[in-house]
Length: 231
Image (tube, rainbow, N blue to C red; front, side):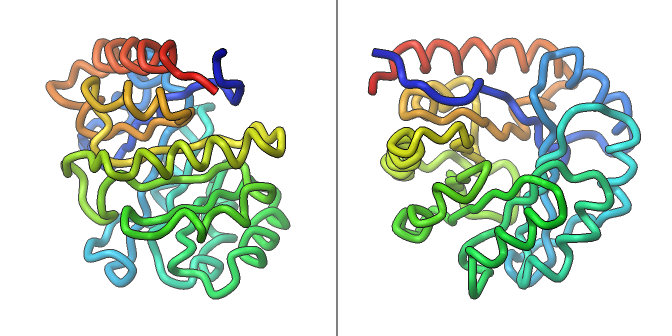
């Protein structure tokens, strides 16, 4: 029997795009059938890298109608939740490792009128996410250590993807199970088989500038993996 759940979507991570032609990259993501755009926000503290702030999110929002999935890889995520929501974020995803009270963080994000997601690093137990399943629009299982693009997928996280899907199915939730890191045509099928529905793809989308074709191939890989998923 096929797993039930939300529609499977590909979410190109613009951190891997050519910033000199970001508008063009966004347009080709739309043409390729992307279901959302993923924006990695890093503060140089929670992760050892620094990216961008609300101004870039606002610029992206002005150039697309796709939902914007804002991944807050930052300490004290509530400090910047409102600026990113105001800039056009559709969903704000924070790390449970960076929040003293994840339930309160989710409540306050919802109070801003946007979706909330909770994420864990590869080494964090799914037990940290499980109590939040009935409160969020997304459970994110990182399949690389957050901070830098281009890392290899860690297959040891797949049991957590399966656990996230089971937790959501058990309560009839249509929230997404998201995977982020090293998602390629070779790794996406395994994540899809375990019940992932939201696939953050970086280099595999933008390599060679063939964005539309790369998305087509990734979609095919996801669909093939999902065809083998069982409850």
